[in-house]
Image (cartoon, rainbow, N blue to C red; front, side):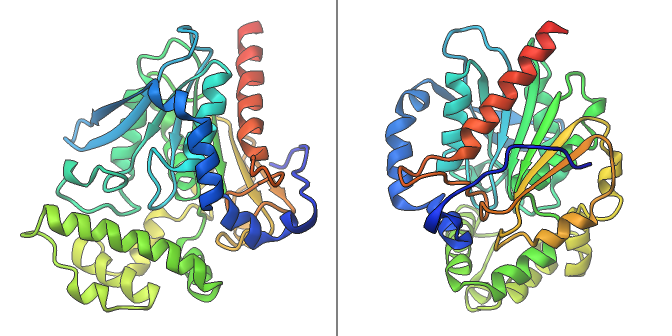
Length: 334
């Protein structure tokens, strides 16, 4: 379903897709965000969420600043991000100042959480993320929202397809620049500007080094580190360390094109950009016409960018806070 919305309208050089995509995690923006969220971080508490299957995931909870939250918002980062990624902290800070309780959830092997589980992270580990979201929402006395970015947006949408069975279900899910067809994303990174591949592969390498150091009897990645091709790198890890014999089966395991999102019984909104250099805009035409799914495609914004000025503030951060506040107010009045 498409819906009218106020489009993101950057000007000048900020209309460039690569400027948008690079500025969102650039050192100057990270420095500004670090200063801006200092108080938010001081009020945040680390906790470990243990699922029924015994998986342990790290989360960072920040109680409402006034002690009486208007909503609980669970935030999911992107691939090789973490609870302390600048974009996640920036959005969380806006929500916190708007009166929300926020919980930033780490996927396994992200941030500093490699020690918590022996098994290696991969994108088909949906059950543990869904279980963690279920646990983190179950005791809420206020409306719960789920927000995910990039791969986190993909996870958020997949979780939402089963969340109607949760004791406390999210009243709305927001997925920003979500992965739709994983192979297309890998192709875009392989064939696009080298800086994207360098950025993500650098983080990937650091993550696998940490895992091998913690579990030397389980993991040895020397041959993987010699590879340069993203497809070959993915194939080796999938075939060696997952239950999938073929990489195509693995990609299908977390693809959400076709009829996958027909299972959505709760409202969800996708916010993305036509000029995203990582997520091909054509992939969104592969999604079903489900009245519970709203798709917003902005002309500009890059990949999870939506930077609105040279102070490096994000249109998206305030927009999400405004929408969640309006939704919460409407629920209170109904």
